[in-house]
Amino acid sequence: MMGRRYDALIIGGGHNGLVCAFYLARAGLKVRILEARSIVGGAAVTEVFHPGFRNSTASYTVSLLQPKIIRDMRLYERGWRVVERPISNFFPHDGGYLKLGGGTAATRREFARFSARDADALPQYEAALEQVADVLRRMALQAPPNLGGGWRALLPALQQGRALAQLPLPVQRDMLDLFAKSARDFLQGWFENPYIQAAFGFDAVVGNYASPDTPGSAYVLLHHVFGEVNGKKGAWGHSIGGMGAITQYMADAATEAGVEISLAAPVEKLLVDGGRAVGVRIADGTEHFAPIIAANVGPALLYRQLVERSDLPADFARRMDGYKAGSGTFRMNVALSELPDFSVLPGRQATDHHRAGIIIAPTLDYMDRAFGDARAHGWSREPIVEMTLPSTVDDSLAPPGAHVAALFCQQFAPQLPDGQSWDDARDAAAATIIDTVTRHAPNFRRSIIATQIHSPLDLERKFGLIGGDIMHGAMSIDQLWAARPILGHGDYRAPIKGLYMCGAGTHPGGGVTGAPGHNAAQAILSDRGLLRRLLR
Image (cartoon, rainbow, N blue to C red; front, side, top):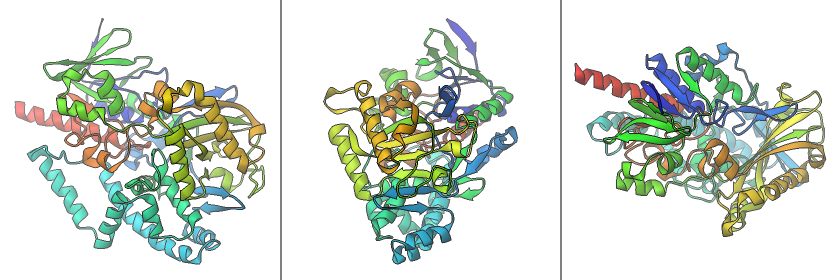
């Protein structure tokens, strides 16, 4: 069955696909998005999961979305609002708690309860990370050099290399530490108290199926601090209307620019003719054609399922067999009759700690044990849990007096050992998570009205996230920057002519950033401009 012809087809209507389509359409291309689900937005969607209760289904918090994209798509003018957390995170532990954020002075006072030395070290630590984070912010909207790509890669390599070489030597040392060291090694060089180390170390395992002792895990810590909310660097916030509000406004911007969006249109196969991508076939057998195909799905899905192996260079195919995908993530939404009442900070009325990220991961040792458990048994007996309560700032998500909780949980094996299936284990794992929260907030279990459970397998089936990987691939040193997803193709161009990658499996990686979609669009438009000049 023959479909229509377009200038560009986008596989997947997640936020990066919407961003890529918007920029292409704004440049005058005829663009169509093909989205597998019946709702646009990919993993950044808001859905009803129980009558009267709705929440962000997968992605759940905002910080990393690029300010340029917000401006270009006029998201604020369209009505999007994000509310900054009053404090970043709240860490309950046996007999006490730690609050992180709310400004350097407030955090220093909090740290001083545990260590005067650590309180004194905080400003220097923040300054060091901020200098490195500024480098990442500048590089986020720049395509990495295509190392091995000849003259075309030479100029961006020189430009980005010069920018790094001009950094002060202490900043270069900090950057090397962050890319090479484990989170534990890096943080122990700054802080002595285990609770304070954990307050920063948590970011190193978010979406990262690894221990804080894993070499390179310090970079993931850094990846989560280079965002901003409402112009405030390093802040995190709640998207009013859930994360789906972002993608709905993005879809409005893309449609206004001329993009056609097709829902319930899962792509089954990339069509290749003479070594060039020429179109796609969707599940109903319809074939759509375009000289440009941009894939917003992860590299593992794209190259293992949608592209025929015979259409790939042999070495590329072999290396993609080993591409690491599986973030160890288990995601739940919970309808609650009341707010959690924490033993160490009692109260059922919303206060600052209810509006923060509530992190159950008191020490780096706790996080390391969780990873060890997951590798040995499939999931941790004491998992890492981040809980947010967005209904404390957005009353559209739950009935009056009730609330919704988003539970983002780490150290759940992408594939269970001994042939077990997540279909059989998901309820037991969810019970372990609920038990973990209830140990700190005794009213939690009895306040549950309903749950929505997404195991790693559920995330794969529902959102196309292979191994449940929210990052579209491990954020390890061998899969970053010019090597994301693989060295020689870090510039958004696939090894098949006409095929581009615009998802989180490319630089700068995971999170709701929009940067991969933006950068892929620039690569596509650059190639079209070059082609036109050559044909003159």
